[in-house]
Length: 116
View 1 (cartoon, helix red, strand yellow):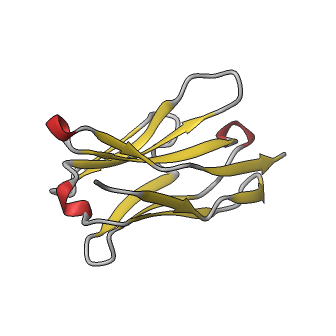
View 2 (tube, rainbow, N blue to C red):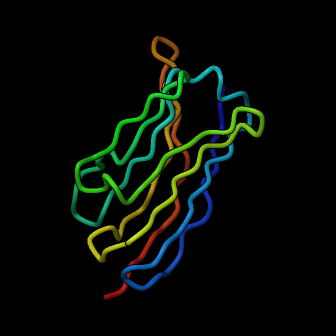
């Protein structure tokens, strides 16, 4: 089993930056892919970015060029660097470990609030 703990959220002005971290209790190498998702009040959870065990990345169109996902297997941690933040980026951000047949694991989330 993998337990995930997100950190790094907070309140930031538009145009600012934050770096989110997702620390895993177990090895993230066991995760076929790691991802960041977000959910704003009254909206469905949506994909922000994913990174595979091979390092391939994928981003939502709304964050391309502003957000960067990365992983440090030695530290069992995945990061989301968020630059040029906009008020519409305000949401709870959640980390996910995808293990295919063995299921998905989610963290408890960290809140990001961007003021205009």
